[in-house]
Length: 567
Figure 1 (cartoon, rainbow, N blue to C red):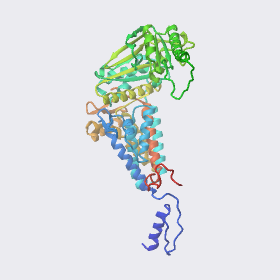
Figure 2 (cartoon, rainbow, N blue to C red; figure 1 turned 90 degrees about the vertical axis):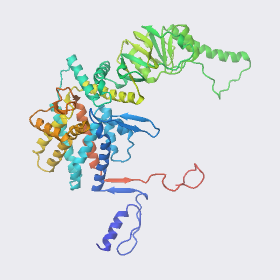
Figure 3 (cartoon, helix red, strand yellow; figure 1 turned 90 degrees about the horizontal axis):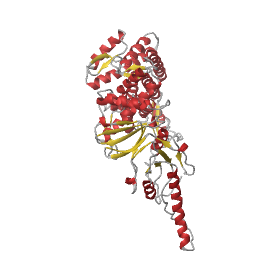
Figure 4 (cartoon, rainbow, N blue to C red; figure 1 turned 135 degrees about the horizontal axis):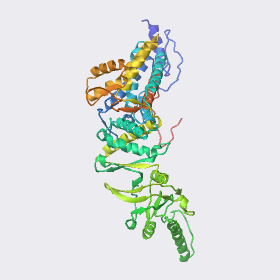
């Protein structure tokens, strides 16, 4: 290698960063400052390989949580808060990922969680495996765009095939639909911490979703956690329940049970306000001062009297209800609760009717809610206000019981996943068999199709077909089975036309998962495949990363603290 070659390389490497370069003849070239000093840039094939390796590291974090025999992860945040979770999206959120390409996998886990609720671990594992299978092609010099085209084509074929083979039960048959939803909920909870109680919870989740209106709004299912008791003590309230709010003296004298009460929902403070510190009122004598004080009391009593005359027996307000008002209501056998969280107040309004009022000027039956029964009840160490028999009940509340705080939080996350799955299954009622069955069938289908295609795409589609086998393989590995043996059996069964054969976790064998009722909405699989392929294409299409130098790493500016830094 002669000297000119060395200097040319030198020139190429540093021209971006503003360092003066010397040509072979020894003359100085003028320096071109394009990027800040300290900027890192890496490009080319090695950059794609590096991004793929980073994604592999992320996948290894969640790989072992897949399936009914998946392990849980214990994550401790900077403040010392510990979270135990098996949910892919939760783990990905808590992993403070800094690598720019690996963040893509965090995003697809979040989008899967928001869109369908379940399959968050699967989507990350699939994306990681797609990249792993594409890595040899990148290393051998196949252009990224050709790989991306192959991945997109394979995904399109897979999604079409899922839609073709998905099983659609009869929607008009209530009993069959309910069974379908329960099976889907049980499958979603099979891999969670609460899989021992999945029969109990799947019925509860389906009951909860069935109570909602056609739009199935998620925020109409309230989930409250009460420490103590066993998981089986968890109860579903067909209406609204929320924790007793802060109360003043006189509260204990109020009745705690009503039948067919009228309910006033307010956004008004019912207490005496302290005068503003900077307000100035000039008074000539004591009588005038007394008038100011009396006026305040009169305004408050006027509001309270209007509430009493309206016939309302339960008064709920988003803002504080003071001690005077609490005593006033107690004397008149009325119940009140102030500082009710807005979300609970809105759910009460949806269930019991009425409106949230900002004035008491026009209180009539049209703006008051009602329910068949109201009571304040002790649940564990907390007291709950419970409204049942609501006329427009399109809402419900699940009160979770359990030992440790982390356990209840994980139960809440598991129920959220199951609720999302049941909502999706109710809207799109097509289902496929889980437990690796659909992935094996897709793998076989793509392998068959790839053989009919000439050119490089044949290899790429075949590689995607291989990648799909990661789901049943990982299910076996997590359960401690011999994955090679079981995958060989599955390939043979699928080649014979048994399209719903999947891993049987209970008996370390293969089984027809459609008969075993391991069902999942086809939408979960379609969404997971689409998201994983999008992430793969995105990461493969990036061939250069430029990192700006971190602000604050340079020398500190001189001058007094807080002074503006000169430009």
